[in-house]
Amino acid sequence: MIAGYAFLAAFTLQILVVSVLLPAWFIKYVRVQATRLPAERLAQLYPGVDLRSFQERFLTQYRTLIAGLAVFGLLLLGWLFSYVRRPDWDDGQAAVVVTVHFLAAHMLPFAFLAWTGVRFNKKHKRSVPEGKRTAVLQRRGLFDFVSPLAVFLAVLSYFLFVALLVYIQQYPFPGFAGLITFGGVTLVYAVNAATVYWMLYGRKNNPFETHAGRLHTIGLAVKSSVYSCIVIVVYLSLNFSLRLLDLQRWEPFSLSMFFVICALVASMGYAAPLRKPEVDGLAT
Amino acid sequence: MEITIDIDDPVPQFEQLIEQIKAAITAGVLKPGDALPSIRQLANDLELNSKTVAKAYKLLERDSVIEAKGYRGTYVHRKAKANCKFNLQEWTLRKLSEAIAELREAGVTDSEIRNAFAGAISRQPPAK
Image (cartoon, rainbow over all chains, first blue to last red; front, side):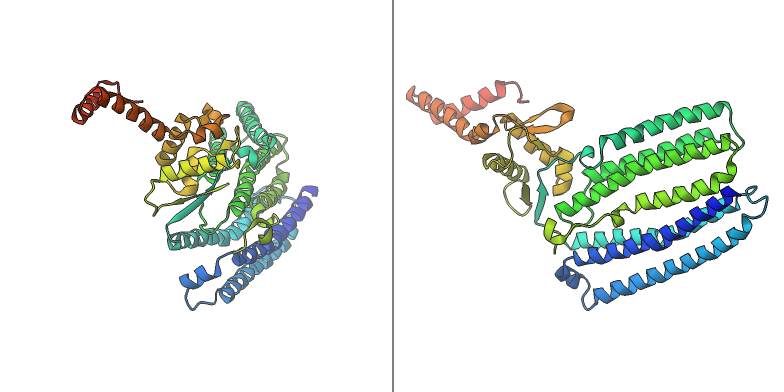
């Protein structure tokens, strides 16, 4: 029963984080970023459009959608409260399915926003007149943004996890797919490594971003990629350990907590205090 | 230290890059031992072809203004400031003028000098 109540507490935390905290950070981030866009350029790009009211309308719609999801989450919590009281509540995967789908529902608006952001940047990039291009003669390296210890831990986690997989492969539990898990984790590491490389040495996406602003963005993306590698491996190791110790009933709790931590790591870019425009020259 | 490349400028982009790096060293903004961005990073930041930046770096390395230290990257040469003042084109012109003056004194015509110069160049192994 403790596992059930722990899961309910974790799911409540998940609702608070993904439906309240993250949207609040995101809205604050959008408002601050909007003040940094060059007004005269936007006026040329969108003649006759009041971008401020457009932005507020968009944020209101987003807030409404997220509030709806939060209410849905509370309804699910109510249902889960009665569900975990059943003696066989941990036999099926209902709690896990609910946790996963609730998070996935929150990811859809973010996926749409990411797509809109890419289109927005492309449009701006085309609008910037060619001519003078500037860069700063300063080398960027991985350890300028994340500590060597964090990178070492991420690499060590990977090898320890592979060792754990090899060990479990000798005494597999039902449903264990070692090769697929190994492939999945390797893919996650490869994607994160590519993201780090692309952020460090790739072309900048936002043509209006200043050097200081770009360093800020790179730092957050690099940290987020490295930390997420560690979090994923720790979660999977914990999950497998629960199975080995025959503690499957704690799985929904660990999954919900994993989502909370992942959401917090992924939203570092929104949560981190943004630099003051007058300090780092981000003012338009 | 910010550098700017004007793509409408008739001066080639690699020369603009060389001049600005040399100017930064002469002004003391870049000091001996300072790390320079990698070719890929600078090329992407300036939205230039990486071959353009590589050419600029190669010429700066030839003039001992910068030095490549393998995987560790590219750094400002310890004698960069003095080497920035050295003008290779001017030196080449002076050396050739001296040789031409000597040949003229010996009675060799300009046409013969040109032919001899072309012949001498063709006999040399190709430059690296």
